Image 1 (cartoon, one colour):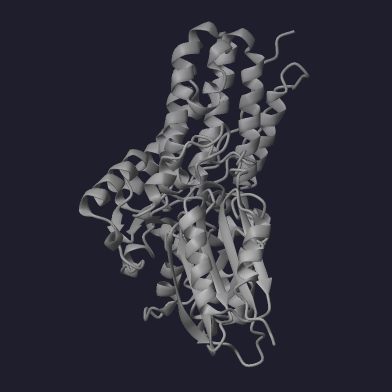
Image 2 (tube, one colour; image 1 turned 120 degrees about the horizontal axis):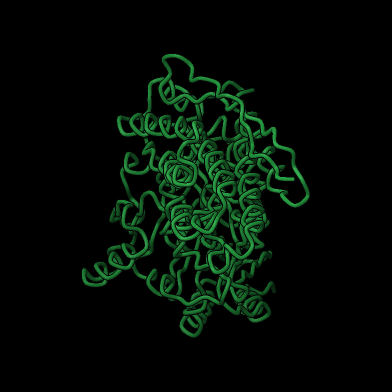
Length: 506
């Protein structure tokens, strides 16, 4: 017996006088499900999640329904597998003639549901593409026609700027600013500029390191002015994969604490590790309903090291392993091309050309020491879900496969004692001369014999420097903390080399 197509209830109308505001879809599928068509049940669950405003969950469910529907098409899919989900227009053009009328109707309904969810997430351009494909499949479907009209209205709103009611809702959200960039590009230096600025704004900070020993907390200025409770450190993994749950927890804690204490918060700055893919971090602002309702991603700011970036952008990674440097540039809303004083004008032009192959849109700002007018990077409303979906159609898919290069690791060293500065310089210089190509990043805070200040050192490949930076706090143990990040590191060799620079007590 043939299964009748889904029948949908009518839409809840838009609230009067609220252009851009979207009412929940009061939809339910009344067609009976059966074991041979599991997509119907997933479709109904997706509609229910959408009606309950669980948008990220709804995206996962509708994608699951589309995958199940694709499987049900059997031979029609053939070499087109995957296109049904990622390239609706192309799939419809190539495969619709081989589908039955019922199959076309069903797929049109699935695309319409996904478009409705995307509209609610703020992706009208991608939604329009889904609806165009749906209209080709089922041109007389009133629901599709209505959604297209709504999509066109939203597009006008977005072109003119966010409608007043939607703008007020967004302004109540706390903006998040994502600082990313490869190891040693200048992210922490930029963060220090922001925190020390005289802008009068109050920021919370989430800082993520790739390494066993945390060093960046000692390199971040302004801790006293912010209050220690407003700097959240995550050193137990990469923010883009193993500790995303900690990121959500950290964001929730910041919001809840500020609300309880009645403090004004102008934004949250997230500094990722240099090996982070920014896409899963950005996805966080859509994946958690609590965060989505209270925060908005203002922009992804990528800091690029003009002297060293080409070797990382052009590196060929093992199959299945992402090139993080490329991903960081691709997802950027603003690009700070830093350390321009270290390269020639010809080399700078070559770097810019390589960046433009990856990201044609993001403004490129030339900087030295990460100095930039904050108006260029804060409050830019630069992040666009539509633009991201154009670059990565599966951006909203949960549990994306993200693999780091297994040859890249970190070695952290923490120990007591005091360094002999001359021995330290000789050891570091020799180490970086011999293995600097494979040592992407070195940084540390050291206790140096005869120096009452903490000695901070940083290095990127074969460029190295250090200087005293602030007194040791009263009662603070003079301990050495340093980390090396690179390829094929020898822990025993690094630990032995550093400990040989320590002054032996007589």
